[in-house]
Length: 216
Ligand code: HEC
Image 1 (cartoon, rainbow, N blue to C red):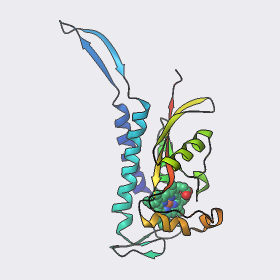
Image 2 (tube, rainbow, N blue to C red; image 1 turned 90 degrees about the vertical axis):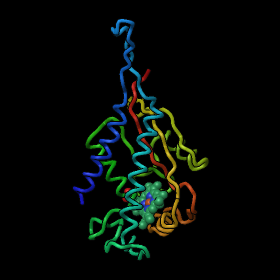
Image 3 (spheres, rainbow, N blue to C red; image 1 turned 120 degrees about the vertical axis):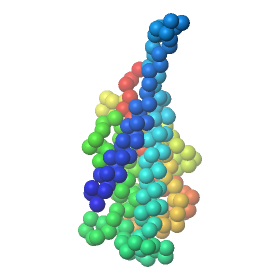
Image 4 (tube, rainbow, N blue to C red; image 1 turned 135 degrees about the vertical axis):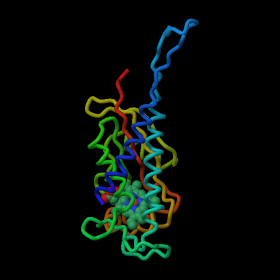
């Protein structure tokens, strides 16, 4: 399973690397075909984070739709349309199950961190189950509050330990009944947020992407 995760993530990182490499040099040629001037054209950071987000979301959705949805069980409950005799469960490591989509996403972000320092990404939430997903910087607090309210992405610059980042938070929305029912009945959620009941269509958290940038 670790090999599989690694393969999938290596492919994802490859795709992202290709997206980032689409920084090209334009060479303007004069009459005689000799280069007169050259300029490097970069991609705006707000575009780069959008590209990364597209790939991350695509992978997560494909994993949910084409892997987890085919299993017969999701966290102890039978799934009516399941065909593969296996379970996706939070305790996948201690059982013979496979990771939940949010866990798969976190595992991917950990593999990415081993492979690149060009950017980092992860999940955050105002109502987190996993402590790693707590809101940390002032930017994360402001951005998440805004995203919770508007359901729209929030982007901007922040500084952490002397490094400037272009950061973006994209809404993670309760698109299926399973999102709502699993979170609302999770023991950690019940203990921490007894009054918070997610509803379909609501923002449950966010995908954050941090791109280190040079100060200009
Ligand atoms: C079967 C249970 C289950 C389902 C279904 C589920 N989640 Fe989660 N979700 C979890 C668990 C467990 C975590 C913590 C994972 C970890 O340890 O990284 C989590 C983490 C998250 C987080 C990060 C914040 C946190 O709580 O740690 C977000 C945001 C999130 N889920 C959104 C969703 C959305 C949106 C859906 C539906 C598309 C969904 N979840 C479906 C169990 C579930």
